[in-house]
Length: 150
Image (cartoon, rainbow, N blue to C red; front, side, top):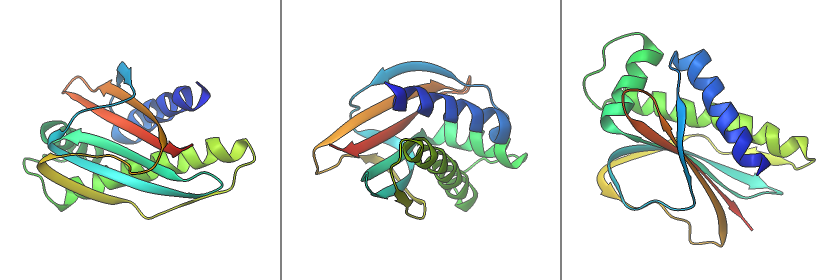
């Protein structure tokens, strides 16, 4: 499971160096249910490998991450939170591109986008391999999901 290990390594590295948070792995999954009071940052992958990388962050955790990332108090889901979650997805996407390209695969990334809602599903209509890693920040948990077309 090389991709999974690199996803974990990249996420921990981004959080310790950019967000100033130490995180730990809680669980590795292949599926999750509906997302509740969550913001998702995602980035599309195109080229020899197609898919999506997504970061699913519950509102409370998203505000804590944004506060730490921007070094200011964030008390509502606003543009700063969307930007921070989108930027984390972007940094992870860049790392994933490097990981997959090390294996001689050419991949382009989309611009990061975010969605948020009180309850929504996040799924692909394609046959994908899903790797979902749940992390704990000490202020709550979030998930990093990689869906790659088979």
